[in-house]
Image (cartoon, rainbow, N blue to C red; front, side, top):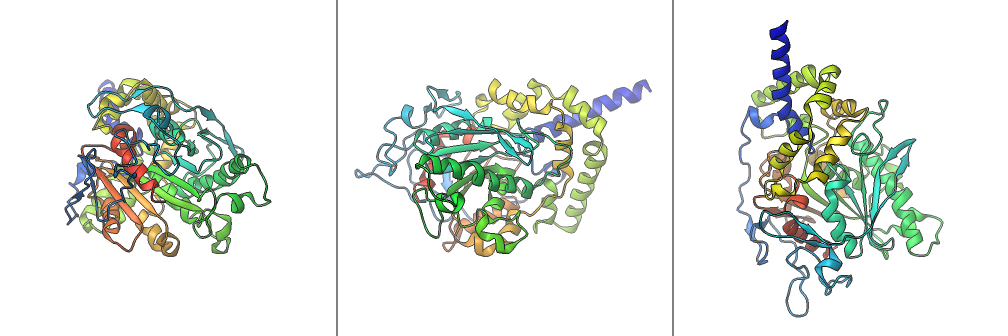
Length: 461
């Protein structure tokens, strides 16, 4: 019994250190890299952009247009912030624009003053959704959607930059994660979260827009949020996501959570100005990779076997799962796991970031949320959403910012390959920038280059 106990404890401690690294940051490919090396499926050589400050960034296929000022200079400075020559004309310095100074070395981003952040919890069907808002209420709305295990915290630089240049920035903690409620009686899924995003935009963002523009109009959602078809003063809402949050953004943009196709006007399709994805995931969990076309039948068998084994031994084993979260997960363990994901600048992993992962993991309901995310149906992959909603996606501007040093969502995986091909196709509104030496969270890891890619794309909307 003594040996059995210590063997079990050793197995839990060592095995779960690997699982925890996936837990902390929007895992999509748990254990797959240890089963089989993902072969390179890309047949192109990314064309480097001519922007002098993007030395490690390359564009796949068509480049995002680089807007210039009257002197031929870029509309973004070296920190990735809009200049005063931007169409918004709201920022004349780094401090005014993003309050962020980013070094190209491995030192942390130095922050001066930041735009005020307002915490505004949103009650969704009797469940509390943690939400923050920053920037002027009258600005074009941007909604930020995090990946698995994350929260509004790691959007800190994106929030500061966009709010500082006049966007109305919203970020939410998805139900079951971060500071949001973790109810035991709700089935977590991509479509559940996309439904929450849709409702949040209608209930909060649209009403804020109404107040910001002085009120008026009986149909807030249709009248003030804007539309790609009709246009308006706000030009629609912009959705941004990381990892599985990218998939939530895409599903919300096309209204995949709605089973009633006649209810098109009541949902976000047609009212989204664009979707920006940072290292897009394949689904709610890694089971979605089983259906990707690059795998052989034997590889699919191995994936299924390992995933089923993990489910039986860990994720569907509440006592072990609770033990892991209570006794194995520590701030130091999370710090090490996160530093492995911040491959460009590991020093960005500070106490604020670590504790934003640590505290939610200790809350009641965290174990069940983790279980659900790993074992529930993965939902549709990005490829399947594009196929199912081909007409709705056809005119939707999509931009991808992809850190190429990412074992969670590798560029040569199924999703990366899919969007790389779309970015090469001149007939699609899909663009893509690959940032060299950067991991799964480019917007908080390599802030300067990620911001530049994001802001250049926003100029085109």
